[in-house]
Length: 631
Image (cartoon, rainbow, N blue to C red):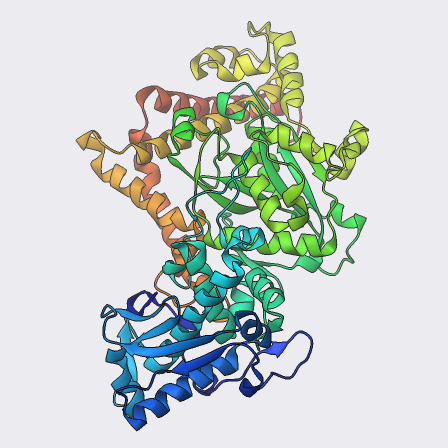
């Protein structure tokens, strides 16, 4: 059934004659559309009982228009007579319904179709032409007839593309479709049958469908042996850049032709529960502009990107309880490799291993198309055991590269997924065999833990520090560490400055996590902090678009991947929101410390004071030693 109230055909406005008169579908075997009279299968028979001549004429023209748009294979596979009649029994909001042998249309719409007295209807806040709505309704319901016979909605590949994803470790699919953003019509998410019918309308009628949903356009084209005329699509896929660099564009374009390889990127585990088995991501080896695609692109680190499922931009540590209960979102971020390397190697003291995947060029393109759909449409939930980063990455590989759907890659741990990729011959782990070469070529990024430990040993040797390891030193309260700073010589001061800066960054991450937890658990707050807390909530609310890019386009027409007009809107609106966030952040800086727990606040302020103290001592010692004056 199709309802007038649930349509969102923003991409069809202004198409004029394209919607009012059939253009047919270009067959994959022949560029010329088959005339409607050539149909050897499907026949639409109008029930003219009780209709005026004008109503019969208008109805027949509508059916002829619909039939002219159907590919020959569609009509041949359906191969039946379908009676079409105007019914007074349909709900007021319903345009049509497919029954066993009849296609029903709502009779209240017939007078306007026949005499043209009402050329538009108001639906979902916008005026739209009624006849294109009826044309789409006929195609939608015919889609249901075809689906009943050919079971398109049971096709595993269609279910992958549609968003009814496979469950890990099971031969079953998730009941819910979490691709809820940027949908052309929320009715498509009801079930796979409605998904087929809704998307068939757009496939046959919307010239932008090929650009907005490229993978589905190709699936319908292959299944129906026809490709309707379509707009010229932009080269590449848009993505939101979540960096806080004021000079960076809000929206970037990812050109598949510039992606040399895709790596499985594994952040090694640590002793925290949520990080014990590592974090799995995909690294895109993007060539610098102008560089031919090849092995040298692996050295263009500043252009490489990372596809990472997480809750927030800078989240690499999550609450174990919230991870178990699904309180965190799970969304796909496109991040600069440099940011990811710094997060793990410097802030979390975790190494990274980057292993190339053996993918064909068409498979790389398909994977990127799937990633773009996830980036703009997917709003999942994070569950530590059933829908974590490894499961999400597995589903991205499964849905983006059809060959991998049967490869048995369903692991619930990032390390387990890497091992399965190796066993199936998909990941080339031999690049890690020579450690020095792996570091040189960027297959490995070592934790700075060893460097920090070396600095700690320098300070420990001079000052006889009681801690046994750099981790013990960094975990010690700032006041405990401060007692040793005044006695440090030049060499030990230089080492301790590096360590205190690391301690400050770690404490800052913990403070951010504390604030996010306050945002998620915002009840029972102290009234003294109400103003700052409201500002914090506003900052986090305003920054929501960084983790959910579709939020920037709410209220704008369009669906699927943003196109030219939407990209212009994103650039201006994103810049405005980013500037607003900067302003709110400045206002919040002076207040935010009051929102932290007293112990957290004391540690943060103590770490900052230590950095200033050891920095000043290093400058004094350096000048006394005759060295250059430090800034």
